[in-house]
Image (cartoon, rainbow, N blue to C red; front, side):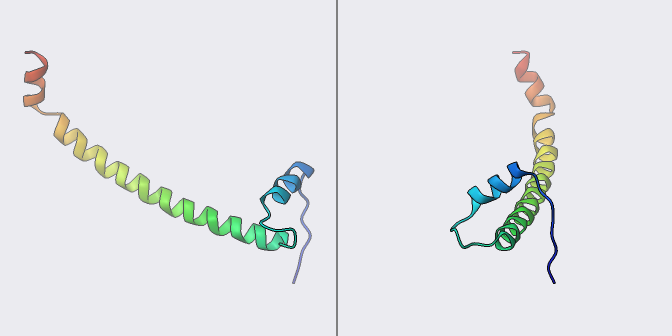
Length: 73
């Protein structure tokens, strides 16, 4: 089953530029873009998770009395 979607000419031109070869269909291209976006989103979630863990550990390491004592030396 197929459908028709309306897009701006600018978007169409951007899609044309992204085609790997002239015979690549827009359906193939959009499917690749969706897959790419999903992978980036998954990686971004992982990076955010690591960042949160690192923030807590860095706070633990940096917020201590020994470091404060060195600042006043």
